[in-house]
Amino acid sequence: MKHRKEPPGDKNIIGSRVIAIRRAKGMKQKEFLARLQTFGLDISPTSLSRLEGQYRLVQDYEIVIIAKALEISVGELLGEEYE
Image: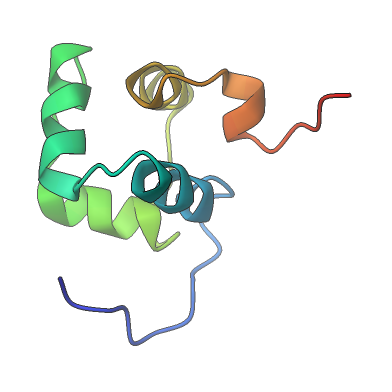
């Protein structure tokens, strides 16, 4: 996998969390794309890469599906802290 040469963008706040959680779960982008498709979100590898790099806006319905595919809550994906 190519490493990103540019700094993260400013189009969303979840991109870096998606990468971190996906990698912590040992999931490659291709596997994650397949999981997203099973939940009804069909995006291209380029679109996922742009989302993770924070260069792509994320729709509200996509956030819900991404959280489900990562098996976390929407709050966790958005960075909420739980005590």
